[in-house]
Every structure is written in C-alpha cells, then in structure tokens.
Image 1 (cartoon, rainbow, N blue to C red):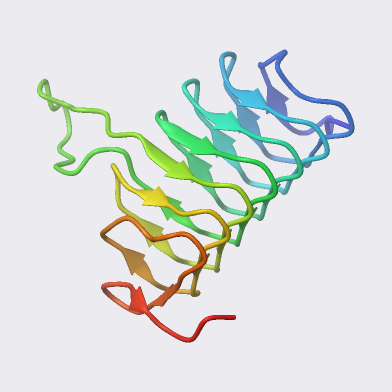
Image 2 (image 1 turned 90 degrees about the horizontal axis):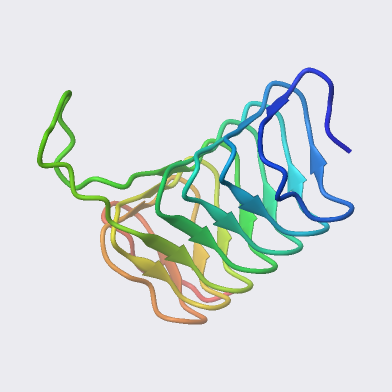
Length: 150
C-alpha cells in the first residue's frame, strides 16, 4: 500500500509494505516486505531497509544508512552521514551507519555516522549515539552510555 499523497520513486518496495502520506522514497532505495513507513519519512537513494521494519513519523534515512530486519525506529530519530557537515563541502565523506537485526531506537535519538547499532540493542529516547552499540545492550543519555537492560 502506497498512499497517493506520497512520492515513491523506487520500484524496490517489498510485499505488504505500507508507505503513508507525505513520504519521499528516492529511486534507488530498497525497502523490504512487511514494513511500515509512517508519514513524513524521507528515504534517500543509497538506503537499504530490511523486512518487518517500522519507521515512525519524521525520520530521514540518508545515503549510507542500512537498516536490517525487525528494527523499530521511533519518531523523529535523526540519522547523520557526515561527521563534518558544511554547505558545499567538496571533501564530503559518506560514512555508513548500520542498525542490526531486532534493534530499537527511541524517539528523538540522534545517531552519528559511521557506527553500528548491534543486534537487539536498545537506544533510549533522546539519546545521542556517538559510538557503536554492542548487541543486546541498552544505551541512554548524551552521549549514550550503557543503562538498564530491558
């Protein structure tokens, strides 16, 4: 199901995936099956989203973001792909970010580029993730540090 008020240019959308209104999905993006892409989501070209993924409202997935299967991304999570952003930067270096299977990222978390969120890890709402997160670990705060495991 692709809502008529979305702009989905990609043909790489899996079965039973829902893309809600006011989303933009660029032509080379890949989205798996049984996903829920909520309203006001932007997905750039060099992005891969696995199966059974939920991306809540207000999320932008920039080039270099890889989301594996069964991941939850809360509302307004901010991904980045450049450690030194600057308008017109001719030395832009894309850094990939990987969110492994089963991970959950809470609302308004900020994920810096070039890191991996481990399998089944949890990032607490509002956290700023500056380093890779180990599998099965819960991190919270700014900068994100190990917290109570769920």
